[in-house]
Length: 133
Image 1 (cartoon, helix red, strand yellow):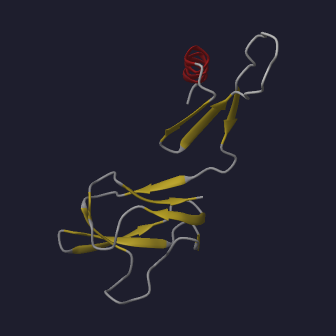
Image 2: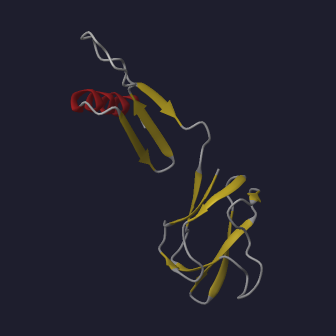
Image 3: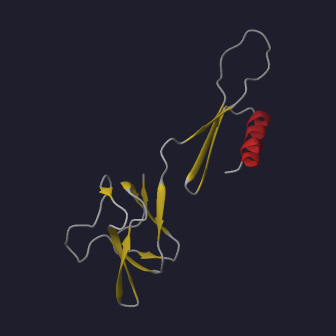
């Protein structure tokens, strides 16, 4: 998110009188908050602060349309699950497309924090499959 957009969000926060605003755009997240302290005398509004998420989250997207599978075959142990540590190149799931099983590998190392698609569900090209932190 560029600085101009953040400044515009700060202006909107000040104009509206709300005390907190959080915006997520893909992998980026910005939270703007202004403390609300009781005051007996009128004073200038405190400057809002901008906090960015300290831990980056990476989203794995489907490279093709097809059917999403978490395991190599029905009843088998899943490739990964929430809380699993993964390495770059490690198979995380399979997308069946045109009767071909395509292994989808991790693009970043980390821990799987969320699986966004259910086993056996159809996916579209570019659809978010899971998040790694």
